[in-house]
Image (cartoon, rainbow, N blue to C red; front, side, top):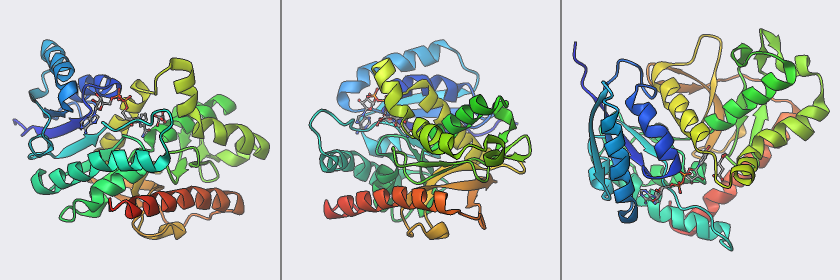
Length: 329
Ligand SMILES: NC(=O)c1ccc[n+]([C@@H]2O[C@H](COP(=O)([O-])OP(=O)(O)OC[C@H]3O[C@@H](n4cnc5c(N)ncnc54)[C@H](O)[C@@H]3O)[C@@H](O)[C@H]2O)c1
Ligand SMILES: O=C(O)C[C@H](O)C(=O)O
């Protein structure tokens, strides 16, 4: 049977994450090894030539699943018929830029893109925002798309989730595949809270296996939360291949489901669960099935976790207040 290709739109296609992402989308790592894709690349005018170069390379791979590539600087064209949208292109923080300036500059990108998704995307559109500040950029795009169900707008904390799994595996000598039910709570920022109290290592409670609250508070949490900055310091550029890998993981899991007995972390509009104010795009533990996700309910949140979740959620509330003030939502 010949499947209809899935339309995948990638913004910031000529950037470093774009370059690490597109070839793997075209080889089946976003949706599955039997799912054909059509790519639509959105760039700003200055990025179009480089995007054309990447498209030439994609063609030169002769990927069996790749059924076409369009390149444009017009969001209405880029999101026309989109089933999956990866919003990667964003305005980076530059020297001397205040948080308000950064939010305002990104509002100029994510508000029109949200509207273009609202007006042009397919009914089943799923959106992942990677560009920082990812949670609040997702909120801006979602607010500009009133006809799209809010839960289709998500922000990426899967990179933090993967980082936390690797750090925990290193500490305990476990295989990464033995680690389940880890959660990133809150914002994709230094306030995020990677929680191992519900996690399992080969079926045993991870916090009990580690049995070292000092390591948890002083090493594990800051290492995961500040890993992005450490990579910028070491590489002279922000994470790209690992970010692209996490974007693929996020969408693949959303579409194809979490494994029995496990969950993942996604930045999603809060329904008020765990005291996170409704509408904030915050990271939660979620299970996924048949292209839908659900927040894992009923977890016992101890005082150590509560304080850290609240701190990250407070930052998200402040970001929401700032973009409201700027008229972006
Ligand atoms: N959520 C996460 O875990 C995570 C991880 C790593 C990086 N990031 C973020 O992802 C973003 C992209 O990172 P990168 O390294 O690829 O950056 P980059 O600067 O290499 O590329 C960004 C690209 O976006 C393009 N762009 C800018 N405005 C655009 C617009 N309005 N429409 C379409 N394209 C536009 C630029 O021309 C550029 O080609 C950054 O905001 C970065 O901070 C997020
Ligand atoms: O781009 C950044 O500021 C860092 C990035 O979000 C990351 O977590 O690697």
